[in-house]
Structure formats: structure tokens, C-alpha cells
Length: 203
Image (cartoon, rainbow, N blue to C red; front, side, top):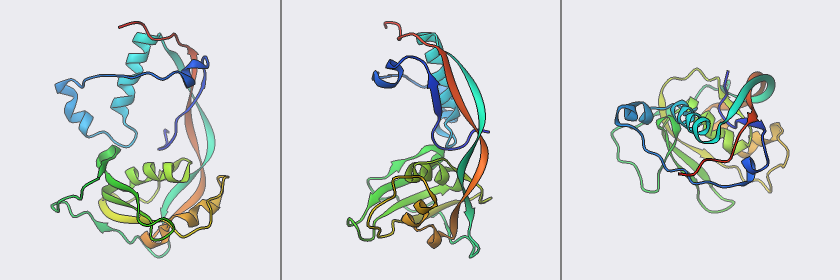
């Protein structure tokens, strides 16, 4: 399986990780509906990038799968406390489109007091993908919830955040208020090994 969150990559020369490049591309009209309805894994985008790298950089890579401890997003004993999205209501300014059709306003509110991230029209699969970035580890959706929701994810008032990835990350974000929780679990996670790559050819 491929879990939401970071993709592990190894192998290849050092410039792969340090040399920046700008990529300009267009989506073909016939691919536009699929492009606009990608899930959190952005499979169409990934396929297009891989095709470009094979063509321009002669990329050869292979996938390996290993067990890894990750976080599972589950419903808490109290039950989910999520309200269905208000689909017809206008959206506020400064909203950011996220993979899977979700939208969000990043961390806002006074520093150290009532800070939160606000999500709109968000599925739990998409939320798990965004939560991966917030807790700096892979989060997979195990809630079984199929709807889309509007909700706030509040940040608790903590003196500091832990540097290590331990269960103590959970109290930083008030998932309890949403009737959700993070639980450690072990799943097979895909990673990629670069066997060959060349610097991109000239335009």
C-alpha cells in the first residue's frame, strides 16, 4: 500500500537533493477532469512527473516495501464530532486548495492562544494527508468516514513541541474536540531507490 504523507527516496547523486529546478508544464484538456479530481496521493501528478523524469533525466528507479510504524487516524470512544460541510456557503478569503478537493486556512489566531487550522469540504483521507505534515510523520485514515466536513483543528497551548516523533505529538493538536485520535500502527510503506539518473537535457 502507499500511505499518505512523505515518500521515502534513496540512492542517486547528491545533486538530486540539492540542485533546484523550475518545472513549467500544461495539463492536456482531455486530462483536466482527472487532474481536478485527484485524491490526496495525487496519482496523476506523480505519473506525469515520473514520465518527464524518465524522458528528460533517463530515470530508472525501483519500489521496495517495508513495514513501518505510522499513525492511524481513528474515531475516539466518544464518537466523531464532525459536522457535514456546508457546500453552498461562500468560502472565506485566504483559503488554500488542498489535494483531494479539500480547502484550508493555515495556522491562524494569536500566537500561543486559540491558534487553529480551519478545514473546509474535507474528507478524512485528505485530512490524514494534511495531518501528516502537522505531526511530521505518516498518518493514514482508518476512520471509515466517507463524507466531507468543515471543522477547526485547534492547537493546544504548549510550552514547546517535542523534537522526537513520539505519542506526545498528539496533545499538541486537539483531536479530542473532533472525536478523533491518533494511534500507532504498523503498515507496509513504499519507498523508492534511484538506480540511474542524469541531469535534465536542455530545452
